[in-house]
Structure formats: structure tokens, C-alpha cells
Length: 510
Ligand code: GLN
Image (cartoon, rainbow, N blue to C red; front, side, top):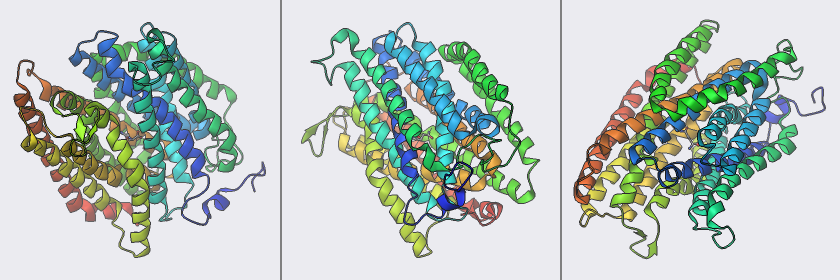
């Protein structure tokens, strides 16, 4: 027991069974946060095109910019959590900002569009990396149940993503609850629902955080895991105040996509310089582990750049070239809906199986190490993109099979499960305690670059295709997917070939 009569880290980490019980607190908070986030994300492009009259290209660029900023801010959120706020306060602060943003969008989406998004961007930055880091702290170094825990947590992410991603936009478009919500208020309710999701997340966290013992306490708290001198209160308030001052600046930056380019050119190199500075202060073994983490982070940029076609070019592909029946023509579904939520649905079912698979293999001492899992992630991603390519062989007059497309989503999702939850897990294993938040922020910063790259690749594929026939479009897109599939396979092979070298850098971490 610690000074407040709560469990010590030791007691939490010595749990019995497959999962620590505290994981459920984090599971549900993250699930509802993702409900809010993916709810908003699912409405964004559609709302821009139909309600704000943006051109398609502009909406896509805007969407990419927003996503890039969201993930870029996780680095800042992780940094402030490590140094000043602690994970718990960061999470609550981020959650409140996300609620404010969603409420603003709900009150008047037209007027507050970029203002509300700015709050959500910064809020996600404070929330997202830090909850993932707390999951890692539930486990002792070397506990082989950690990857399984992250797989479960990842299922929570996708449960929220699936529900929010589907329900919010369906309400906005009038596919759900149209008899009780009049046309004029559908979007207000839809964005408001995202705020409600976030509120539930915070309420859940408030009532369950006691179980977390010392995990996530502010630096300087007597029970905090890393011992340090207490910080003066004004430092914490200064973080809150300066964040709020930044809101209008972010608002301007997201509203003009060329600023995103500048931002992306600057933020990556700056964070790397900062990381190298931190690396100079740790011992050699810790430094090696951080270099290994950085290799994973760099590869993940490639992964997300390819994977995140889903929000951009694949949604255009789905809109133009896919039939709307599935299971051999027996069920009618919106192909865009399938593209948005199919992957999340597969993950909900597959993540627990993967969690069990890793434990099963670990018990028999044949679990592939993280590098091989990453490599496999790329291999499945590549194969999935080859299946996307193969949709062209099922086309009739440019319209092709939603079944084959869904099969591609399944294969891609297997790749995601080999890489994304494992990536979260390995960040927590390779980072020293005082750099956990920053490294998790770096992991998500790679997603920011992935989103950014994905937008560029997608824009490239879509270029000058306005007058093309459906078949031409199909050929152009599927050629692009074949190319991306090949890049993914090459990246996977390189990773597997590099594995002995990376393994050395990891000093026994697996
Ligand atoms: N889909 C996952 C999530 O929302 C991973 C996102 C990412 O890292 N790009 O957490």
C-alpha cells in the first residue's frame, strides 16, 4: 500500500491470470475516447463536401492535414505528461478539450468548424498517447502477457472506432433516428454524441482511476513511479494556459493546408533533435533500446502511409468502383460504410484471438519476436494490397466485388494486428520510465507522417482522372495498390533481414 492506501506498482504488476484488472478502466476510457474521435473523423470529409461545399480535393487535403495534426500533437502531449502533468492529468485535460471541441461543433458546425477541430486536435494529443503508456505500466519488464494486454486494449480502440465511426455519420446523414431528430438538427446531434462519448470516457476514468495505484501520477507526487521534486503549481497552470493560447493558432494552421506542409517539415526534425538530446543523457544500453524504438517508429511511417489509404483514396475507390452487395450478393451494404468500419469490426474479433495466439506461442517458447511480428505486419499489409489489386479481375464495366474488397480488408487487418498493438507495447518496453510519454508520442507522430504521406500518395493516384471511365479509374487505382503492395513486401523483407542487428540493440527485450 502507498501513502494513500492504494495498491503499489508491485502489487498491481504481480497480478494473476491473463490480464491485470486495471486494464478494463483504460479499455473503456479509450473505447469512448475513440468513439468521439472516430465519430468526428467519420463525419469530417462528408460534412466538408456536402455542408461546407468544399471541393473533393480540398476536402481530402484538409482531412489529411487534420489527421496529421492530431497525431503530431501526441508528441507534445506525451512530453508534457512526462515532464509536468503526469499521464492522468494529461488524459483528463485532453478529454475536457475534446469535449469542448465537440460541443462547439455541435452548437454550430459551420461557424465553429476549425475552432472546434483545433480543440479536438490538441485534446487528442494530451489523451491518446498517455492512456496507451499507462497500459504498459501495468506490466513488469519481461512479462510476456504485455502484448496480449495491448491486443485487448486495441480491441477496445476498435470497438469505439466501429460504433462512433458508424453511428455519428449515420445520424448526421439521417440513416439513424431520422424520425426523432429533424433534418435541421441532425449534425448537431451527431457531433453532440461525440461529446457525450468523451464525457462517458472521463466519467469512467474518474471512478476507476483509484485502482491504478501510482500509475500516471504527476511527477513530484510522493507516490509517483519516477521520484522527483514536486513542481510548483504554477508550472501546471502555465501548461493549461499556454495550450489554450495555441488554440487559435492551430485553428489557422489546419484551415490552410500549406501550413501543414511547413509544420510537417519542421516538427519531425525538431523532435528527432530533442530525442537525440535526451538520448545523450541516458546510459548506453538505454540508448541502444531507444535507437531500436526509433527504427520501429520509422518503419511505421511507411506502414501507415500505405495503410491510411483507407481514409483517402480507398474511400474514393469504394464510392466509384465497388458493388454494394456482399456475401455473394445476398446482403446490400454501403461500400463506403464497409471501407470505414470493416477493419475495426475484424479487429474486434481478431484481437482477442491474436492475444491468445501470442500467449499460446509464448508458452511453447515459439512466439515470434517483435521484429518478426513487425515484418509479418508488412507482409500481410502487402498481401492485402495485392488482393485490392486483384479486385480488377472481378470487374464488370468498372464495378467490382465488395466481397474481394472485404477480403483485402481482412488481410490488411491481420497486418495491422501484427504491428500496431505490438508497436504500442514495444514503445513501453524500450523506453526508460522517464521517457515513456515522449516515446509513445513519437510512435503516434509516425502516424502523423503516415497520414501525411498517405494523403500525398492518394492525391497522386487521383490526379487528372476526372473524365476517365470507371474501368480506367479501376485500372489506375489498382495499379497504385499493386505498387504499394510491393513496397510493403519489400519493407517487410528488409525488416526481417535487419532483425539480427535490431535484436542486438534491444538487449534482451522481446
Ligand atoms: N487505429 C488505431 C487507433 O486509433 C491506430 C491509429 C494509428 O496509430 N494511426 O488507435
